[in-house]
Length: 531
Image (cartoon, rainbow, N blue to C red; front, top):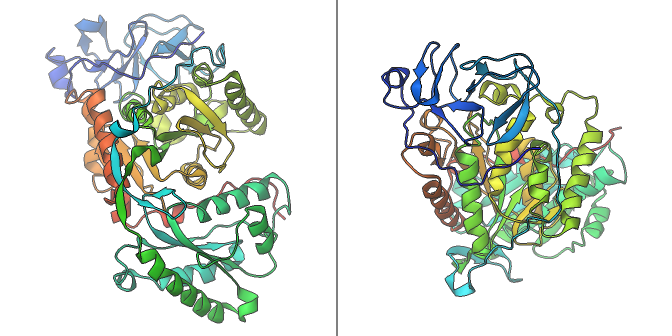
């Protein structure tokens, strides 16, 4: 039976030393995550033939950074333990000092005891007067925004060209007259026509669009139809209980007489919305209004050692301040989902998570997808042997928090603390669902590097290792690799992440915002059959 190590990772103070330094015996080039582990993780590239007396082994092959080395002899079928958790089984006999990866680890499901709710411990919430504060935008209905956008939406891809031309009219020079508006964002997609007229695919699309239109970060919306979509405009508004108003305007390309007239009319409607949106001002508000969607992409062998658990630590701080953290990417917690169900607020919450996992197992049966074992090429190159090992690190984004609720894709988030939203592992689709559910910030961990961004909720990117951070410093917001380098403790970086969450929620642009990244990452989940 697998176990799960606590969030806090107490690594010995070691730097990302060079092989020559390690050879000199000054630093251990490997990280031991748990006393019971039978594999270690290489801090940096380690050459073959290196003696590591403190671990009682000599490397038999070169071990790439982030990859694993065997600490003892394995017989075929023995469990491979990382964080004292089973990540697979030896597919052959393995000698101490051997590089351990997918070539000699066999993927297999592991025994799970879901223990629904048996380990639930309520989070101790700070009194209101002690909670952290940030500079937020309070909407008339009391909801709090971290950004202030006007959104241009389409009911189907047939209206995409009109929406994009409307959005392009509001460039940096035009928006200079509206310094309190973050921009006019176009949310184009490839759905809404040529799809099922009803059922789950249409429900998911409408829920996603409605969630964005209602999002606190959207000051006003323009919704465009071509005129004969499967996702019919009036049906969308009725389904999502949206009513036309000065904050929600609509237009039909056909009724306007074509593209040229529709673009002109759309520009005029947005111009009418801008003065009221410009009136928004920031004021001190409680951190309880922050909802962070947690993502990981381009993970490596260090992600589960630095960036993910550090984000988990920050999520614990946020929850104590009354805020909310959304864990998602259902296929990327497969194999460790029982660690969440055990911490569920109620047995029913735990069972809802298992039900979503079962849906994915049925959906992916017989397909070449990561829930069936093999991770992406980038994950594999970064040191992750299979989905069990990837899930082990990915789940650490939730820290040790109790699981308060489970939501389907793009459902509105109601609970505070740690919640789970069922999404695919594909980052743009997953983050889109989280934002539709109410996330007003995204924290995105990466080990291999990512250029992801999001609108209207900004993305904070967390690097798992220093070399990648330095290589992609224009894209990365925080270097969690200092944990691996021995220059910072996990708690230190967790606190930094929380403080940066407050800063960016208060309006400080993230790296992806400065680069203008985010609009193209709006990708509703494309479920279902197509005509």
